[in-house]
Image: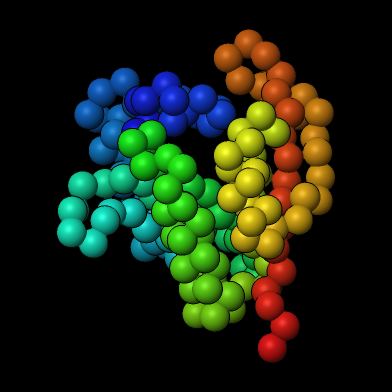
Length: 152
């Protein structure tokens, strides 16, 4: 997925050049889990183990019970509601198992599909940063959404 232009359109990160880069990324995700700094879930259909996407909590800020959520999905599965379903499950886990107080999501303001997913799941836009991110020779804007744990 990280080599697919459609998937990476709004993600300002280097694409893997070869299998070595891909394995290094997988090892980075494993280390994040081992060091209790985040967690990434692979997304598959119940009857098909083929990877269709992933979702993660990363950039954990333990002293504030806060984490950033990130996700991506293969284009074959766009528009089917699966990312919203995964996001709801991950938020439930974050608030009820991890004890998070808040979850943040940072996105490109041009990624309307991702913003709709966040808004449909109760996230509120908290900030809009103009040209705060330099990628491939240009300054890009970012939008920050946040969701507080449900009151008990």
